[in-house]
Image 1 (spheres, rainbow, N blue to C red):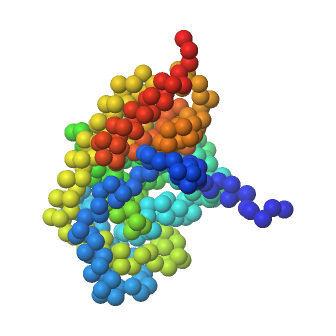
Image 2 (cartoon, rainbow, N blue to C red):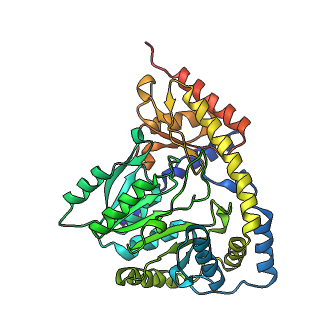
Image 3 (cartoon, helix red, strand yellow):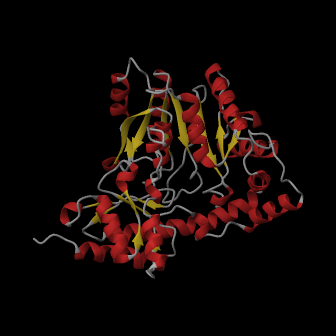
Length: 406
C-alpha cells in the first residue's frame, strides 16, 4: 500500500507546472519572460491607500485570532459594497471571509459534494475548480464556453445536458465572470437564462466574480446577485484582482438568499471557516478600510483598468496579425486565450508547444489543455507594452521557425 492517498493524484496546478523548469533554466543563466501568472501587483503596485491601511492595522496590534467567518468590519464592508455597486440587500451575516477565492472553492466543494455527485463546469475552466471537485469525490459535468460565440454559453445545449442527468441532478453550476482564461464578460441575457435554468432544475449557482471591476472595451458586467434574487446562489470574490492585492490571500463568499437551502449552506460553510481558525487578521482590517475608501479605490481602478485595456488590446492585435494564432477579443480580466494552429507546426499538442517555447525562447505561457481546452494557450497581458510586443513577436517567430513545410 502506497503512502499517498488516491485522491491526492488530483492535486496539481497546470498554471504552475512549468515553474520548476523555468527556475532550472534561470539557474543556468537563461532570462525568462513570464506571461503565465495573473498577478497584478508584479506590474501595478498595490495602491498606497491599501498599504497604509495594512500598516495601520499592524500598528494598532490587530494581530490576534478573529472569528473564522471573518472580522465584522470586513464582512460589513463587503455587504456595503454589494449594496452600493449592485443594489443587493445583504448584511454581514451573508458574508464569510476566506483565504482567497481558492479556499472558498474548496469549502463549497467539501460542503456540497459526496463521492459521485456532479457539478457543472464550463470549459475552459479555472484549473482549481477541477482540483477541488475531484479531491472531494465530485464528477465534472462539462458544458462549454463556445469560441464561435465569443466564449459565451449556449443555454439550449446546457439544458439538454441537464435533462440527460434527470435522475442525478447536478449539485451546482459554476460560472466565471469575467472569465479566466478567456477574458470574456458574459452577456446579461445569458446570465438571466442561466438563473432561469438553475431555478427550474433546482441547481445551486456559483459565480466567481473576482475580476468584476476589470472590465473594458465597452463591456458591461452583471453580477449574478442582481439577477438571482429568490434563487439560491453563492458569489465568490476577494482582494486579489480588483484591489490589486494577491498576496493578502483574502476572498469572500456571499450567500445572499434567506431560503432554507441557502441558510443550510451558509451555516456549513461557516463551520468550515471556523474549523481552520481565521484568515490573515491585519489584512482583513486593511481590506475593510480599502473597501470603504471608495474615492481612492475608484481613482486607482480607473488608472489600472485603462492601462490593462491598452495592454490587452495591443497583445490581441499582435497575436491576430499572426497566421499561427487567433484570439477572441477579451472584454475583462487581463488574459488572452488564443487558439494555436498546431496543424501548421511540428508540435504534438499544446503542452509540447509550451515546453518547447520555454526551452528555446525563455518564454513561459500556459497550455490551454490545463484549462480543459486543447489547442489553446493562455497569455497574461499585464506586462508593459514594450515587453508584450517583444515577447509575442518572439512567439510568432518561434512558430514560423517550427512551421511545417508546404
